[in-house]
Image (cartoon, rainbow, N blue to C red; front, side, top):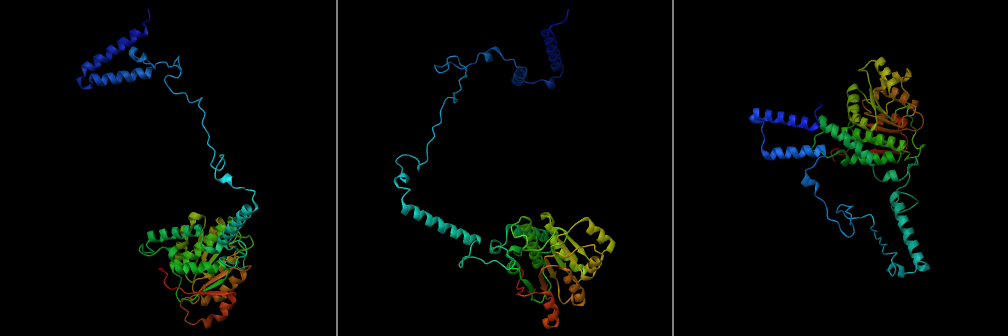
Amino acid sequence: MAKGDDVKAKKKNKAIRKKINRDPAAAVSARVAAIIAAKKRRHTGKRRQCQGMCFSLPTPEDPFNDRRGKEDTAGKKIKKTLPLSYNKGSVKDETDKSDPEILGDRKARKSKHMELVNVKMGKGNHEMGAIPKNSKGISSVDMGCPSKFLFNCLNSIWDFLVGDGEIEGEQKSLIANSWGFEFWKSYSFGRDILENSGTSPSVQQIAWIASTAADCIQRKDSELIPADSIQYSANSPFLLYLVPSQEKAVKVRSVCKPLKLFGIHTVSLHTGSSVEHQVSGLKSCDPEFVVATPERLWELVTLKAIDISDVALLVLDDLDSLSDSMNIVKCIKDKLSGNPRTVVFRGGCSDLSIHAAQLQSILKEPVDVLLLGDTSD
């Protein structure tokens, strides 16, 4: 005859007790054993007889104890209170909204408020407080102060340069650079710029130029500026930065490298790499920034490896160092269609009259002249 479940359970428990008795180290106290037994009963769904007798007492509201002592919230109604303006006898209802004097006063206040908003946002034609539009048609909203995206670009470059040891952490951040704000204002007004400090571009100046160009790309992609204000296409780089040597090309590219986080890709073209390698690299990507020596860039342009017709910003790193390549620079300038904005750094040139004719062919009026001052501002 088959054994019942209770016989099997007794036999199993007996075997467990024997095992515990054989191993004194595995024995547990009576309190722990009671806790373990209670846990097993909970898992199996069985309860002791005394535990099954626990219940809530019936009440007149729940005589059959259906709610098991819990309060019934389904039948309660939530009282909704009206705002003060809708309650009877409120102070606001005492005034007659149809009164012409009151309506006229409200309209006057609203009109004055909207006028102040338009002045702050750069809308409308206001003599006081409004910032005029530039010749490119960029709205004055973009002229009040640099955008948050530009500041994010500057902070990314700052963090990279501090970590790389290019800038000491004790210096003020790039956002506090006074030359950068002056450059941004001139660029926003669509003017060409001549940097007349007599030094090569510093890391801070390169960072502001790259961040301003990246911000312009972002605003154009977001349709925050008119589509015809800047001539730029995805098949052509936005920024063309001409440098006199391979070492300077590597330095400028290292400053622009952190902008890759924002989708801005930078390539450097110089004689340190083979032409074939650079041609294959340009086929695989469409960079937004190109840092190049004039000779190598012109060689790649003649091979039709890169299209520079829609460049929107041209930067000449050092006019004195690029003086031997000015004929090639002019050829590159002629390849640019439209009217790209141009930034020229005088560099170590002591007499600008030597390059006066060259500057006239590169820069267009009006030209803003900036001085470096202290870049650590």
